[in-house]
Structures are given as structure tokens and as C-alpha cells.
Amino acid sequence: MAFWQLLYSWFTNSIVARAVQLSLIFHAVASNTPPTWISAMLASGATASALMTVPVGRLFNHWGPGPINRISAVFSLSATAGLFLLPLDLEHIYCSMLIWILAGQSILFTTVGTYRGVGGFFAERKRLVAFARMSIVNNLSDIVTPLVIGWLFYLNPNLIPIIMAGLAVTALCIPQPKLTDITARSGSIASLSLLTNLKSVLINRFVTLAIVIGAAIHSLLFICDLIIPITGNTFNLTSTEVGTILSVLALSQAAASAYLSFRAYPSDTLFKHFLNGLILGSLGLLGAYVTEGFGTLLAATAIIGLGFGMIQPLSMSLIYHHMKASSVGDAVSIRLLLNSLGRIFAPMVLALALSFTTSTTLLTIMGFVLMLAAILLRVILA
Image (cartoon, rainbow, N blue to C red):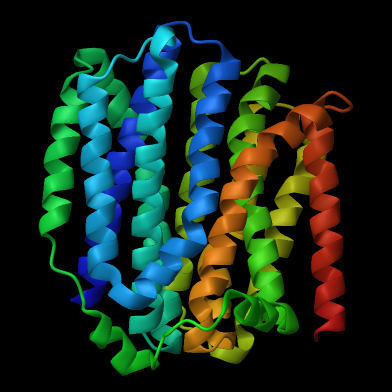
């Protein structure tokens, strides 16, 4: 029951926040907002999330998942109110930034509350299964949400904040596990100093690698959402074909998570499977070198999603397996912090790289680097 309460809370809050952010993008495009301002809006949310990641993790140690997820719902409700009441044209771009930040904080709070709640509530093997099921829901919502919000925006943009406000209210009412339910299973999660926990992360090579590689793959998948349309334009693909490829990227990640949700791996084999996922995803990136059109790009993208789709649940499971309960909170926060920083800097790095090379060559280079790293780690840490 606790897992489903946490999952429903996270799913509802995330759907509302993502719907608000998608609506803001649609409004920005409709009002001919320059790309630089849209990028600034996205960066403002990622920056606010990066600044708040560690403090939110520490609040969880005192309050548990219930208050954290309810604060997330309040942020979602505030964002929907802003979407309905505030002007959203270019002259009032700062209103859009404020709403975007509110939605981003909702995602941050519910992500911390749910991952920490699930991680602390479940034992080793069940934890990986739970994280994998969370990833499935996340991947599927990434497919469905843009379709639904695009349709609602076409019918009447004002329908979106009204419907999403209703969902946010339901999220406020969802029962949540208590902090004592988690500490009874995982032990005390009282915070040590941030410096002490940072040292604990750095001296454990498996945790360090899980955090760094996990955040890197998160940023890479974010880049794929940008670079696939660019590559599709190079091959003269239609918007329908590009949309199909992006959907396959999300579906293949969901398939990888579904596979993990039925495979309760022993804890001492987690890192081996983590590297297997890295190698498989790297093969997909290397396949970009021989892509010539829709079919080959679709196949390469599917392999990328299958490999890298395993990274998120395995990364979180590795952090929980190797860290003490008193340090795991800051370790998860560091991972989420790096995710936010990746969303700030990845588009800048992508734009710079594409000024020197083509999109397929860039994917191939990334694949080669990651493949080499995975093989070396497998040899060194075997």
C-alpha cells in the first residue's frame, strides 16, 4: 500500500507540473516568444531546482514523504493558478518564469519525497523492482502527457489549469506513509553534516560512479530529445517520423524498466548490470554512425533507450545499497542536483558541439567515449 500511495502522489504531482510547463511552452510559441527567452525560462527552473535539491532532502529527514509530497501539491496548485490568472505573453515573460519555477519545485519535492520514501521503505531486491516500476510510469507519462496537453490546448487552453488544479487537489488528499514507517525499516535517517556525507560519497567508488554516470545519462537522454529532431531534419524526415522516433525512445526505456521490474537482481550484481546497460546504450549511440534514414535511426534509438533505460533504477538502487541510512539522503540529493545542472548546461554544450560537427558524428563520439569507459570500468572493477 505504501508504494502505491507514494507512486500515485508522485505521478499526479509530476503530471500536473509537466502539463503546466508544456502549456507555458505552447503559450510562448503562440505569442512568438524568441528562443532565447524560452531557454531562459527553462534555465530559471533548473537553477531553482539545483539550489533547492539538498535542502529538500534534509527536510525529508525531519518530515518524511507526507509533508514533502503535500508541499509539492501546493506548488502544483499555485502553478495552475498562475497559468489561469497571470498574463503569459512576451511582455510578461517573468510571469511565465515564475510559473515555470513553481512547477519545477513541485517536480523536485515529489521526486525527492517519492524516491526517498520508496528507497527507505523497501528492502534490497524489492527496492530495484519499485524503482523500475517508477521509471515505467515516468516513461509512459512522457509519451501521453504531450499528446493530451496538446489536444487540450487546441480545444481551449483554459481547460488545462482547471483540470490540473483538480488533480493537484486530489494529490493533497492522498494518504502517505509516516516517517516512522521508513525509519523502522531502514534505521535512523538523521542527517550528518553535508561535508561528512559528501566524503562518504567520494570514498565509495560505486556510489560515485552511480551518481556521475546516472546524471550523465540523464543529461544525454535530454540531449537526445533535442538532437533527434535535428538529425531527422538532416535526413528530411517528416514531423510524424521524428515524433515516432521520440516515442520509441521513451517506450524502449519503459521496456528496459519493465524488464528490471521482474528481475530482482542480487545486490552484489547491481553494478555489473549497470555497466551492461551502459554498454548496450553506447552501442545504440555508435549505431548513429551508419544511420541513413528513418529505419536505421529508429533502430539505433530503440537500442539507446533499452540500454540507458536501465541506468536510472540501477543508479538509485546502487546508492541505497552502498550508503548508510544517515548519508543516503544527501547522496540522492547530489544525484538530483547533477540532473538539474545537466538540464542547464547540456543544451549549451550541444549547441557548441554542433557548431563543429554533425549530429550523427556527435552521437557516435559520445557512444565511443561511454563504451570505452564501460569496458575500462568492467576490467578494473571486475
